[in-house]
Structure formats: structure tokens, C-alpha cells
Image 1: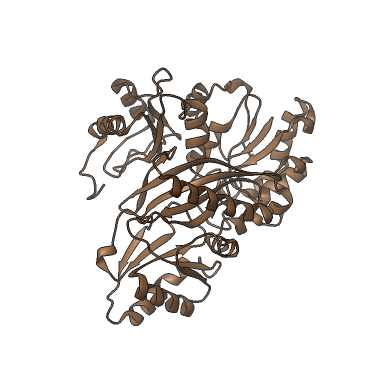
Image 2: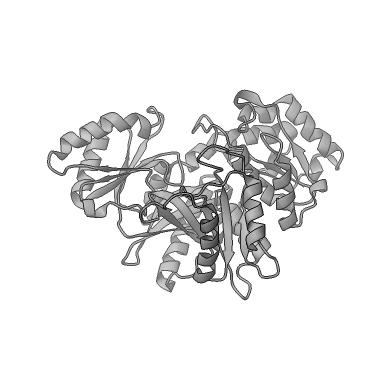
Length: 455
């Protein structure tokens, strides 16, 4: 039995409002006999859908929902993990299945100190990889983009020109220097993801792009640049530093680069690559992610794998254990530069580990690619029933016989307003033509406006 904790980044680091649907992706990893802790009861239709694809018997899963806590069940309150009601529910399940001896592993989406406290309260700390490290708040350390630059510099891993700052004055000086040499700079929050915590500052308008992860783009007049930067940082320092709680990363922007990643599994004794993939952006928002990554030249793949292992061993050396993603860009000249490390169960995990490896067997002949997408802004999907009905009518639901079709990654919550439901889904396809055909059919069904330019 594994104890699976469907948590998210600790609210003390970055507060999110409602993650009930997103964290249910942990159910993709559940197998017969596992115990899953969720912030709210799972969507019954989604649970049935997931277990139907993974082959798990839902009747042999043990689902535990802690008291709603400070966030009223919209996300898992870290303190609720050690609430007596939570511990009693878990102990009741364990007692019926041989006690703590039955626990093979404690596995959480986010490496929270609260998970270490939970494991200690149950007497299963030895089943939580890196428990002592997590108990001291190590999860925040290894998921900081500032820590990444420090460790990358220490190990010699290639990174973009830039620096980490803790003072607005230093931010102005560093940004000015990089803009004068590069023409564009990326400002990064220490804790955020999918480009949401990034902003792109551009003096050379030819470098402005929608195909990079940066939620906002600022055009700065190169004439009078010091004054313009002083005004920018006066306005944005509080956002970038999360009210002075964290350092800020400032990096030179590399135009026309591909965004790729290599995930690793870090244990006490080994570092093992699990999968590599590519991220694509539209209007500076993450729009598509594809695995496996097959089209890198041998020299580029070697750089990605070698640098990824180098970084993973550095994180292993300071105490982290578990899944870890090393993100990178491939410059037009073929040089790989690493941009961050996410030491957690990332949003890529279910795409490669469950969809590509467990359900689709993407590496088997004939090979398949899995491409995860967010619902485009120009689609309107009212609810989950509407989307699943469309998949059925169009013949686009995932077929084990052909190993193609669409897998819905998360519960689709009803949104009757004009925006419609927001969710992710994966297209399983043999090649670009098949992907385009599936996407076009869905676009025809759900598009209610013109797509954004360049989308």
C-alpha cells in the first residue's frame, strides 16, 4: 500500500484559491490497495474514468478526506494532515490491512514539511523518501528558482546569463546591464510555474514574442532606460519578490529557443532519467506539452541528459529524494541552457508516467506521442458531460485498440459563464497529421471566437 497525498504547493509559499480539480490528478497514480488523501471527495465520474483507463479497481482504493481546514476543502490545508480526524481515518485503514507494515511508501505531489509531520505521526517516516530533509522545510529550498541558479553555478551546469537579487536597487542595475547586452530580459518569481511567474522586458521590439513563458510583456524605450527601469521596479518589485519574502531572478532572454525538460527519479543510491518532453507557448501562456521528445540531435540530447543528471545529483547531495524536473532551452545554435529545477511531482508526471508509459506504451511499435493541452481561450466547453459527449460522437475518445484519441486529464468542473470550463486533456497520436485532425475536429465543435494571432 502506498499513501498518496494530493496536495499542492504550501499556501505559505504561494497561495492558490481552488485546486480540487487539479490535485485529483493524483488518482492517475493510484493502484489497487492504495490510500489517497484528497482535500475534497473526488468527482465520481472522473474516478470511474481514471480507473477504467489504468485498470485499478476503485473498490480497492481507500479515500480519505481530512477536515476542510482553513481553505474549506478547496485545497489541502497542510495542518489538516496531522488533524486527529485525519490520522484516525488513516490508522483505521492501516489496522484493517496489517498496520504500518503495510505502508510501502508515502508519496505526495508537493514535498511539504507537513507531509513529514504526517509520516512521523503515523510512525512511517522511513517510508517517506527524504523525510528528514522535508521536515526542515527542504521542499521550499529545492523548488526555488534562486536556489537553482546557485546550485547550477556550483556544479557548472550551463545557464543563461543573469543573477539573483534581493534589493530593488540591485534589480535595476542587473536589468540594465542585461538589457544593454541582450535586448530582452526575463524577470522570474522564485516560486511559480508554467510561465505565470515570469515577465519579459524588451528594448529591442524584434525580440517580442508570444512563444515564451512570460505572463506579461513590457516594452521599454531604450532612450532613458535607467528611469524606465526605476519605474518598472518601483511598480513590480512587490509582485516579483512576493512582498520581499523571496529573491528575484533576472535572466537574459534567448530568442527563438525551444523549451524542453528532462525528468529524473532521485533515490538514496541513484539518479535515473524517466522521460523528456517539450513545452510550447501561445500568447506567452503554456498551451501544449508533448512526450516523448524524439527529434533532438544526438549532441543536443547528450547535453540535455548530462546536464540534467549533473543537476539531479546536486539536489540528491543536499537531501532531496523523489521526482525532479530539469527545465532547459535549446538555443538555435544547439547549445542547451538550463532554466530551473522543479523538485516535486510536476504537471508533466501524469502525462509521461501514466499516459505515455502505463496506458499508451508510447515507446512500443508503432510509436505514439502524447500531447497535453489547456482548453484554448477561443473554445467554450460548458461542462464535462458536453466534452465527453463530443468525444464519443466524434469517435475521439482514447481507444486501447488503436492507441490513439483523447484522454481527459482532470475533472471538468461546470462553468456556465461565458468562459466555459477550464481543464487539460491529452491527445494521443501517431504523428502531426493525426494530431491536427483530432485538434481540428474539436476546434470545429467548440470554437466560439477567432483564435489569438499566432495561436
